[in-house]
Length: 186
Image (cartoon, rainbow, N blue to C red; front, side, top):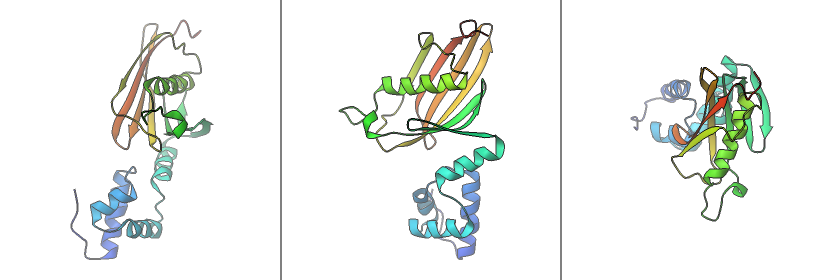
């Protein structure tokens, strides 16, 4: 979806501000395509409007609604965490995570998911309990993924945990765990 070139810089900046407000995950490249201008023009407009780069916009949006927890685990940055409820993280895929095919193997993504699920429920997940994955799109080095974590429901003695990885708005990997609350010592 490309918009017609706008008549004035002020008009374009107003529309850029609104587009970023509605979708903080828009990159400079996507904004440039949307408004039919160069990425350099978008960067200048963003700076003039005081709009930070995409990663900082996501972090700022989260911090407005939640108290953030800035902790690093390898290349994972946990932005927000509400124990036993939900969380949000960023992960940068590094070259040491990929195999000879150039993509991250499913078992590594599963391992990252287990670590995030443990953090979400207070490190009391036994990975030998029920877990399943869906690897929807191959993931290569250099990708920055947004990870949404949540305890979807608690039913009797079971807790259902979802860890979903997104490349922009596209789901690329999902893990579901069913944790036994009794095993967790609750």
